Image (cartoon, rainbow, N blue to C red; front, side, top):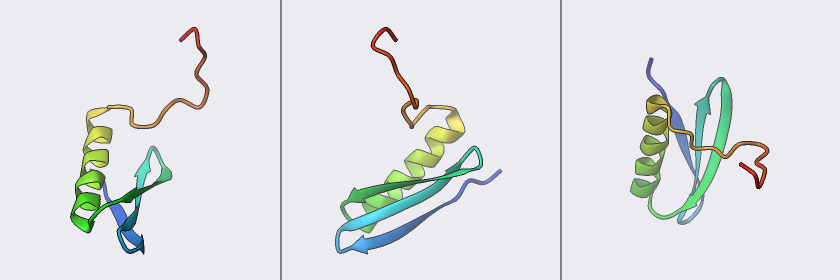
Length: 64
């Protein structure tokens, strides 16, 4: 299954990365060049494919 995402320039030097995980759409805003945004999006997608959690749990206790 091929994972895809989308890059949108919000303002000069600021990009919004959109990608899907588990049926939900996530967005991340980053500053840098378009090439940096493309690398970051590829990294997010590959981490998801390898099963690495890229999003913090909704609730984390100090004891955890």
